[in-house]
Length: 68
Image (cartoon, rainbow, N blue to C red):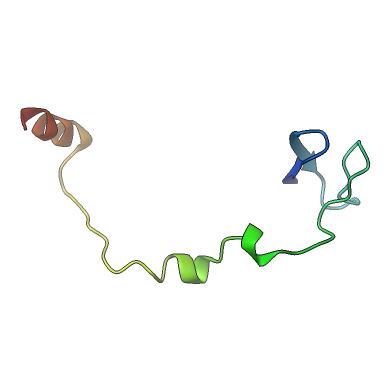
């Protein structure tokens, strides 16, 4: 299954990929491919320079923030 946004119906449409990706209104999805509509995970995470991990729990963190 894949979910598309139909501009004509103005709603999300779930399409079974084994069939033609077409909405009930007649719009066919996937005819044009724009790279701007997709997320490139190779470049998205490669821009991260630092990831911080904390050993505190969420409750401890909230308590520390409330004390400030």
